[in-house]
Length: 171
Image 1: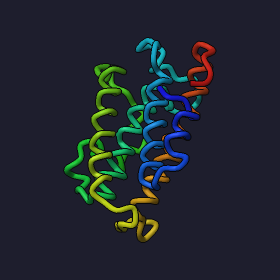
Image 2: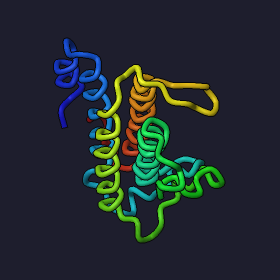
Image 3: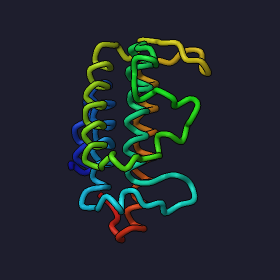
């Protein structure tokens, strides 16, 4: 994984789309780096009072990608997106990891979802606006910035969980 300074060099003088894509991809890679080398038991371990686990963070970010890039931006019906099924009625569903959901499978699903998100986002200008139930409208640019913020925040959570597990800090 490139460090944040390598990412910054790529994005420092790039156009806006490249900058947004570069930073979002940096944090997408960072969340996966936080779980490398850990056992299935470790990534499922609850270390805080909430349902948050390392594997749950990967699963949650997978759903968030589908929600913002496919459902909101590309306007795909929630009924057509399995990751969104039942989420409204059970918001903690993202963090519940079934026995058959391995870390490897969750990372594969996340990678596939990120690819779908990139493909969806590439079809729209940053000024493209879509309806949002609470905000009225949001632009593709807003979705990018929100996803950078959301993913980076959860990388911070993963950083803390990883440190609690084995003392590993940083990249």
